[in-house]
Length: 246
Image (cartoon, rainbow, N blue to C red; front, top):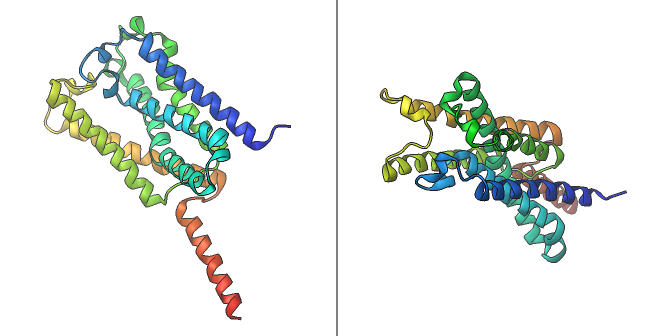
């Protein structure tokens, strides 16, 4: 039978290969996407940025499981794992679920706001589901299959909010630099503060998803964030000191 480490490596290799294939597919074959032909190309859409984050995460996780653990000191491996797990819990997984939830929510409400009918003629449905469905499914598989070492709830919340703030700032910078809005929906939000209200709702949705991810991980694997580990370590040290004194 294969060891748990081997199974982990194979699963993460498969997930990393999938995301790599998706990025290559998007870069080489998907040349008709109208949004990709304007300022900043693919790098202005939340979907593509999130796919890149997932790709980097899974490749990094695979390299850690398959190679780094054999050639690097334990102290460095622990730091790499802590960084990858922190990013997954606070950014990668919530952002992936946001892409799926926001896209399909708007799609079923009024698809013209997010994916007009003519896009079906430009982009294969397979690619659409790779972007807007499997992205979230794979993140949930990773969340359920592996025990991560998350940041404390407040630290993860702050990191998630920072990521959201950076992307919102990026949207407004593109508007300033190129005079365009990334999403067609923004051209319909013409009344004062409508765009800001919509973005506030999206950011709130992302933060709610972070809370859900944190809660799911705790219920599946137990509370395993940095604070609990540090507290457990401190308690052990205190117990040892007490024993020595006695």
